[in-house]
Image (cartoon, rainbow, N blue to C red; front, top):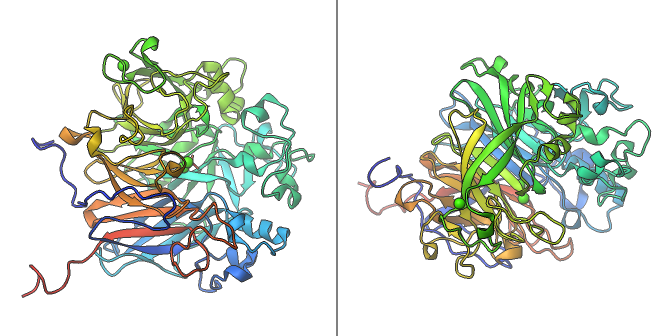
Length: 599
Ligand code: FEO
Ligand code: CA
Ligand code: CA
Ligand code: CA
């Protein structure tokens, strides 16, 4: 770090102004352009039909880009000099109200909706590293993975009684993935994706402590899949365990279109937002993961085996075996100073230390009264027993490869300190937390350490109207308002980038993507880079600042509208319907005939 703070990134920009929540525009800074790379329904394979929103079929959807793109990652294809890349995208859920004409039979909506969930792998190409990408229809690595595609369970709970069903007596082969939210790129070039709100796809008895703890109820689901396929109603004999087969971290090899994706039981089962991996100093790999539910927990997994450079086959198995921990935070200020409004305590910081409590260790359960398999399948209950800290909805949890610090996006928690609910504490200091906060964690010693220091680096909100916002000491009159942090990314010089989900409901601005300086005198400076159209959420940010380009997945544009009266026409603005889209933002080429470059 030089005298003037962190190394500068070539991706310079003047922060955009926040955009009112009724505006249906995609806004980028002066000097930048944007371009859709791939939209819901775009054809993936040589024989894929073109998208026709009025004539949708499940057969067509199998060969087209899915709905509600969330986690997105782009990996350059070796040897292509940056001209070809493979993109991985997951499709979290569907918005039937704006996808289908209301005259479409409900059975058809169900079938097409199902196929629009899952994963996509698609190749990209560009002329050179200064021009934007296009996707390549019919490319070799292109793949759709849908609800009837098989996944292999790995780890200690694979094959357990808790995972067996009539359709899969082995307890190792699961069809489909559900509620895929965020994810992460592993150091060995595979993708992880978190199965988050899987419970909403199931009807269950909902009476056991396990089903209750995971939000499973005996109510007809919104999408009604249980009417089409008996496994989505676990009251059906032989399918009692079907819900236990969701809520895992999924790993996909984007370079092998024939590979079977895996679900890793060693990382525990909960509403995984995603998972992010870092190689520890001692060679073990550490995966961080949040459970995105009000008052749920933050987790860390440490692999049994060590990472081996250039041994992809070996590394591909690192997440199959290891120890799982859950976080317990302690504050260093008196509880009486945490007033619930967000007033800083007298030591000037929400901060303290914490411990990683072992749930599993050396292939054994560390939780009294629960077997190893039970701890992994009913991880929330195991973590309850250890007294882990109830957080304000952990979304992305991402280690910086620059500083090794870990950043946790706590998106919000409207129930914090409500009657009958957990009260405020130093790591979650605001009652009815509307705008969320960012926790910064320093592992004390190596990345595998069981002790850490922490502080709240951002206490989010609109500083113009809320004086209990905090930006690591940076003057709050000089930051962009930010609310409901969700996904995290880093640029090449170690700045944190945050995308948001839910800002319109609180501060009244469209969601967006924000750069946050972490070091030097600008630490805590928040600058808005882009804003997404009406009702949309900003997902899957990728910041390639050396190439002066940024990618985001625009999820559920126009979500609050209807087929007949859309709220959004993003991205084509051609008066048809909104389409979830992966967008590239890039610096415009300087105008020809001016300045340098022309002689
Ligand atoms: Fe699907 Fe936690 O956001
Ligand atoms: Ca999310
Ligand atoms: Ca303190
Ligand atoms: Ca979210």
